[in-house]
Image 1 (cartoon, rainbow, N blue to C red):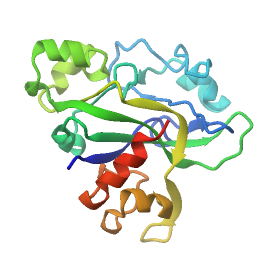
Image 2: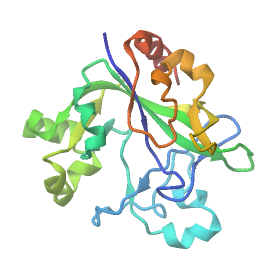
Image 3: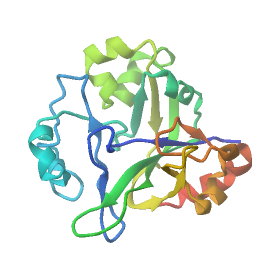
Length: 240
């Protein structure tokens, strides 16, 4: 049986200062988090054009534009060659992904461009996994061929710093950045009664309830339990 994992990515109020923009027709712009490590990264919010033809900085409120215009972006995951990398212990288990597994990305989005919609968590894309592992699991040729566009790899200084713990995931050509986002959250409460984004009841019927650990606001990767893997995979593969 395969594996399905939900992973939060992209800019949010805690990393970048905004939610990604969501439009009336369900389309969205995937805005990467800021890159505060790779000082050689030339792509910024001010010079990077999104899939809707606007510079990413245009989605920031006026109060943040001057501050963020020249801020480098950390384009990871990237949906050109479908790679994702992370050197932290929180994501280390992703090295266990195998061909045919699904790594499902969700992000915080909020109404934009005159569309009023409160912030929520939405599936924005997924990788149909081709390969996953640590750097030591790949040959130099595989690193160049499969992961050459990944932000943790093409910057050599960063790569040399991270390579001992860096986990890399490569998606097949069946992977995709969705055209329309799919809402998976609703508002619940934490133990103190404060509002918290949790997996919605509708999506619990698809992905399961993770033994009651429903918070997906700022959580570690959520591995779908075996009883729900087939259902979750079928649901995700139909998304466009």
